[in-house]
Image 1 (cartoon, helix red, strand yellow):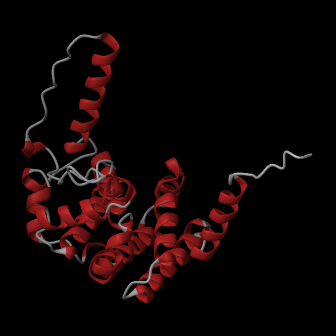
Image 2 (spheres, helix red, strand yellow):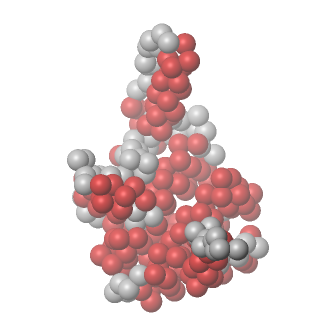
Length: 254
């Protein structure tokens, strides 16, 4: 049991607990974070559009009563004033925002990011808390969605992140694993895209990335009977789909 707990918390530090958890280290399923603010603001704007009248901003809970997660916004991942080519690239690839956040929020310490990913999972596991789940999902998307950064951050960040994910999948209740696989296909989409990125890459340390993926694949099959396809399979399916929708040449002489 001690070994399993150590595997789930090996990157979590005392300083991180003091920074992220509410005052006193106590929380519940109702403890909020910046992500509730995001939802409230979206609802406020929608109501304004529907009614045509200004809706005042709601009063947010004090920081002492909330998790102090750094805000991860994977939807807006393009550098300011970016050229059109960069808008296309970083609209999908999250490498720019990953590099920026790693430097500003975690002081360039990849282990601190992985530790926060571990802490978010424990907040889900212990407190059944939405804020922990949302932060966990966004960190996973941020790291595994950064194909361009695989070469520079593969060994120090991506491989440990996959290791942490594998430990979590081993320990999480089966219904949680099933829900993150099925709900909006979140984990399936993130992992499938990541496997294809690794398959198509030619980066130093690619073998370590492939080994980490293989461990995840084994865990998913063993615990949840879910098959993570190989990069070759994903690429073949994409080629077939592209062929189905490719422009057709029509002979008008007939």
